[in-house]
Image (tube, rainbow, N blue to C red; front, side, top):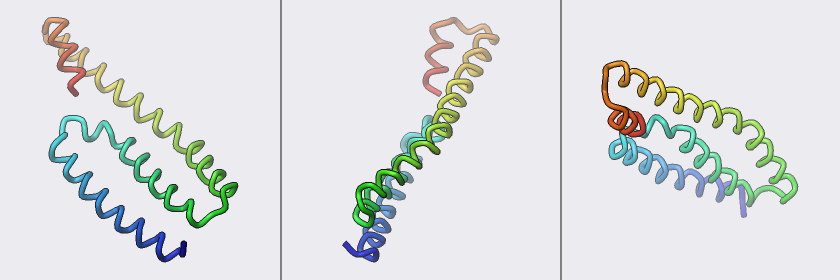
Amino acid sequence: MSTTTVYIALFVASIFYALGLEYARREFQDVYDDLTWLMVVVGVGYVLIGLRALFAEGDWLRICGAFCVAGTPIVVRSLINVALARRRLADYLESLGGDDDTTAEVATQR
């Protein structure tokens, strides 16, 4: 497959992905920001899949490995930040005197 064909396919896929992200932003506002890491992983993932057509398997696997090694700490950081934000929200709600069941339910909805 030619480089141009792969680039065009990735461009078209990105248009649909951007439309999907916009839909998700409107429909899932409560959790959208917490899932930015997942959106990036999906975007990088489909680019890597497209690049498979341009690279020999060994080279492509090394490229994928580099993204996994570099991306893992960033994803872990995002997950920790989401967990800490939920914990802070639960602590705040608890300080207002809410009962434990309501506090836990509201915090997990964030």
